[in-house]
Length: 253
Length: 178
Image (cartoon, rainbow over all chains, first blue to last red; front, side, top):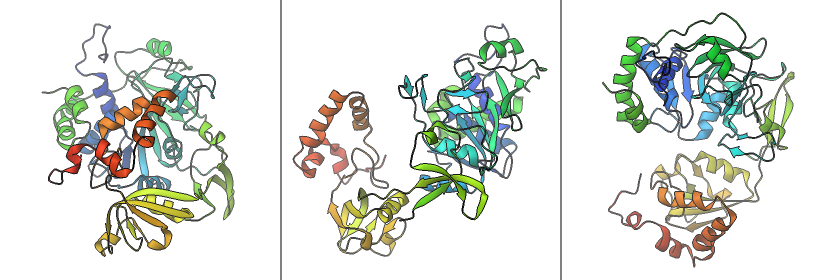
């Protein structure tokens, strides 16, 4: 994994996964139900970190872990349909300017995909139902952040007469945060993570990010980093929640 | 179940919805100014699935697998294989995902009948076998060979269990969960 700030001569003492886990944790609100899907190491760490720091009464759902109250997918489906999910974390292979994400397939011809991914039905449903969805992507490049996705697995916006309970909230990458503008139905550059610059973001983003004032993302605090590396790393190992990943990725003391 | 369709909030604007003719956008029948997706109900002619325990009357208990109950309620005919067959399910066994015999056409005794997948509470998936299955499924010839070995080339279920279920699963002293 590329260390944050590498190549810039500036030494950062956290890696990209730690940065993203901390950024995601800041999106979690107290007294809400927040969830992430399967194969979601970074959001799982972010959810647990938030509960440890500022969202003590948050209810967490980490699918395929002990932090999951459900026995069947039907139960999760109807919790979402009832609009009880405050926040959902999801990733997409491609994310586009209009907040659509693709977790199905790549290639210009929809009938002849060049690569296929596990994307199914859930994401396109939850995008409408969770009050806020934060889409994360561990790669910030022109192939992952695109003008238009090859296949829409989940739609950022919807017709006005369609029943929709929630919307995209943010996109988080190792370089920047974008917020979703629900009036214009487009992603707007929100903040840039040090040491990256607006020019870096422009060079690595496949859609127009504008020329606005580049606000710097607040860096991880010592408290966030310490809790992530000590308390959350231990908790993930002890509960078998992406234990091998936590042990390897979240820096030991 | 047996309902004509099920409403769903979501999916509008996706390519998934565009490519499915069993899910359409419809007005809310109680408030025509609002719309959502409705999915056409599946009405299978026959449902076949595996359960933890069934009794001689055809009552079935499948742990937490509520989806199996919905499947049984939606299908015209239901055939169940079970790890155990008992004379009569106890009250305790009849809770959770319970299917009354009125929905069930027949039950068959098939220990390890979920292999290479798992049977909740009894054994997990056979990960080594699953890996072989995934590799075989990458092309038609390899998959045909897989089917020949594991399906067409097998005499009966007992023969399959003898040849393909890991030996340690069959020793009752050892825990089968994983």
